[in-house]
View: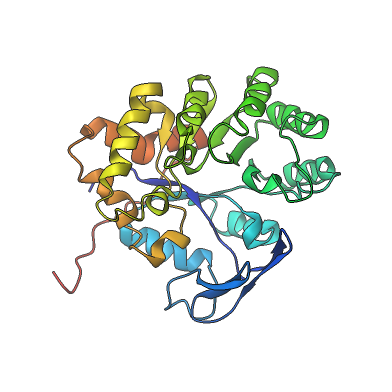
Length: 307
């Protein structure tokens, strides 16, 4: 294919074992998990042990021609810092990993200091989970702002998923104004299928803010492949802030319960709505520059038995 492909939003875990908003999330078998009161197909059914490992992901990446991936985190998977440090050490050229603090309780600043000391170059905040039943943790709180200044000073990237629409956009504007040198990647393409999604996209008019499309195939799941609505949204966002501010992300592995990993980006590759140069930037070059990836492996196309 000859194109640099980098996944700007993925997840890894060895086992899910956590509680979110009082609901248990537990790994079961055959790719299933107990998820907030019901059984959900969290992984493809052939991942029978429930292990969403770096090695399985690398096999998918190599097959799909994806050179590198950014591994984010989410509270629904449990905090995976220990495992991701192992992944970082074992595969430093293929993965950029984000640490995560327990932001739902006070005292996370010390955790952030520890993550930075251990070598994490990114910290993830699943900010939509901070609007809890009994309280709300604001992104512009004193402790958050102190952490963002620390991250800015140390060149640590903020990866953040926001609640629908403009719920937390004002808080993000405060962060950007206070820490203009902080590099920020906003996930889930601004929750593109919800009202007010463009308010999140417009944050990328700021110099160090990027938008990544992790989960866009999930958000457009009702229309399914080739996700023409998703392509139109990418075109619309590019017209608003420029294609150089947008990055592809898959939200692996949850999205590949419905489609293959390659399908999570080749709907963009095959679309006539974007130029070849726009596809190159969106699918890999923007993420390479933003996250600082070095040389990536050459991944030749392997012909399928069905071809």
